[in-house]
Each structure stands twice: as C-alpha cells, then as structure tokens.
Length: 316
Ligand code: 8YV
Picture 1: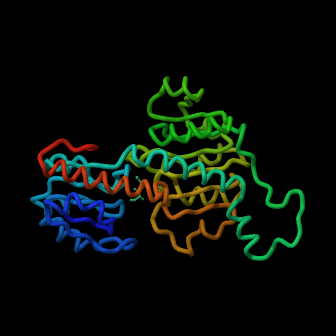
Picture 2: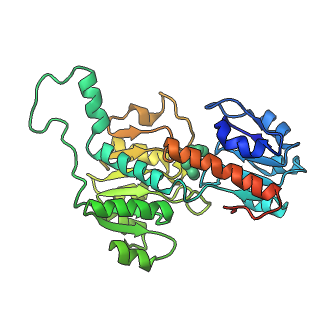
Picture 3: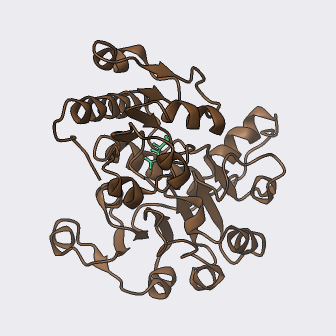
C-alpha cells in the first residue's frame, strides 16, 4: 500500500499489521509524479490526496491496484469511471468532514463580512492610534440573505448555521429538496441570476464536475449586489477567477472569502493577493485535527476492507 503524504502512524497501524505500507514522508510537499507512478505500479492500494492525479496513464501502469482511497470528499483528481472499469474501487471521505467544512465556510463568511483579518493586521501594524464610530465597520451577518450554491451535505450544514443567525436562505441545486425546505425554510432558486440578485452573501459549495466548471462567471458577478460578498469553499475552477478579480477590483461586489483557487497553491504575486477586500485561506475547509484524523482513519479502513474482499465503507 502506498500513502502519498505523511499521515499519523495510528491511522496506518491497522494496515501495517497485514500489509507492507510505504509512505511519502512529507507533510506538505506532494509526492513527485514519477515516484507515484513507480509505487502505484507495484501497489494493491493507494491512499491519495487531491494533488495526486489518478488518471488513465497511472491506472494503465498499475496492474495490481484494487483500491484508491482519496483523503477528500471531492474526487476531481481521479478518473473514477476509468478506475471502476478496471475493477478498482475508488473511495472518498464523505460525512466525517461535513460539519468541519461548514464551520470553516461560516467562519470565512464572518471573517470577510466583519473584516476580521484586516482589523487584526491594523492592530498589529500599530495603526490603532484612535477610534471612530465607523472604524473597521463591516456588514451585518444576522437577518441577511444567504444564497447557497450546492445544497448537498456541506451546503445543508452551512444552511443550519445560517438559520441560527436568522438568515433568509436561498439555494440553487441540481434538484429541489423539499425536506430541507421544511426544516430550514430555505427557498429553491432555479436560476443563478436570481440567486445572485437576491443574496447579500453567496456561498459556493458545489463539487467540481464538467457541468460546474466555470459556472460562476462575469455574468453571475454582474448580477450580485454591489455590497454582496462571495465565499468559495468548493473548488477554484467552479469560478472564472479573472472575472472574480475584475468584480472585486471594480467594486461590482464588495468582498470575497476564498479557501480554494483555480491553481493551488497561489503565490504572493497572484492578483487576488494584491486586493484588500479578500480573505484568503490555503484550502483548509476540512482542516481540524479531529476531522483530518477521522478522514485518515476512514481512508485506511476503506483500503483494509477492499483488500480483505469486503465492501468498502464509502465507495464512489
Ligand atoms: C481536502 C477537500 O480533503 O474534501 C475535499 O474535497 O477539498 C478537502 O477537504 C483537503 O484539501 C485534503 O486533500
């Protein structure tokens, strides 16, 4: 079994009892492609990260591979259909990260609306010499309208938090979810233009698929309110990033909170880094210690199940 990033030993304990487990020992540097191809060509199981491309080239060269367990709920780094066609089980880590990711989405919304990062920098840089009634004044969150794009597990968990803030909840999704509408009083909006027009805040939670790539473009941002705030905790390429930069620079929208980017990691010369009206995070949506441990354990269990000839726990 090859693990493409350093995971806690307790996670791998279960696998080490029965199998040879090798690991790329770096915590933050991706496993080089050449090494991944070489290890995969000998492996029965892989535990992978979003930065590992599990594509046709890799699968064709990996005759023993039976299971790929991705440490993420998203699986846009894997050619799932091709893998399945080769009898490889592909697993993700749903459910265990739902609440943690919703916490981050809501934190990012609050940090952006109330200018928390900007205000912290203001104090640290010794700019707090005086006080005025509108010093670092932000936007209220309670009683506002939140538009959620993608009302799956994480979108619904965000909506539950919004209900606690007495927000009006609008959502756009592939299908209407009447149970959720009853529970949260959320309103289904079939077209994105109307959702953009009516929302004070828009939070993007959709998975990346060929249908959602580039979904939020200049037209979408042109329909948002000029004091609207955009938050993205899904994938950067769901957004036309240059269009978002343009909307933020021109004041078409007020601010954005972003955990994900078209190409990660972004560097200091990225146009978004130059803007004051953004809060930028290094893709840490599911990044609590508890949840990352749960995710790691789930990937190991999935691998163990498949290699023992049992049903995986969370196969795609
Ligand atoms: C990743 C994520 O798991 O689950 C997802 O789809 O985007 C994150 O939770 C994380 O970036 C590690 O790959």
